[in-house]
Image (cartoon, rainbow, N blue to C red; front, side, top):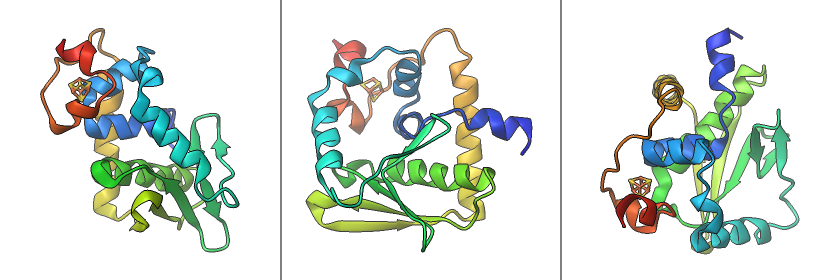
Length: 171
Ligand code: SF4
């Protein structure tokens, strides 16, 4: 594995998810400005994740960096549990990052399923070559972002209304 790819793989799945939603959110989270820890929405999300599929979840931590909800090793499928599909694109990038991460560690051929238990819905996710390039570009932008001393200015987007940093950005 080359050094650049290794550097990109120090990111958590949550950070990649946030980067896909809002770079400012990713920067604040990465710098330990922990509004997310106090968010009721985040607490609800954690509760759903922790109480759904109790017989299946194992929380597999890899390199103390990424945490997978569970893996179907036989069929090479990573499973991720999410509260709602509102941020579906960001969820997709997060699990594609997990597929990519395993690939870089010499475990190719995984796909992923995002489980939305409150909607009784499953979303299958693959990592195509185009997706891989898109993801690598996002990881490079994230790398660059975290070198900045200040966060990007807030931009009003749909996600702001439910973001734990709302007051920090807008009040
Ligand atoms: S409130 Fe909006 S601008 Fe601020 S971190 Fe959240 S999503 Fe980004």
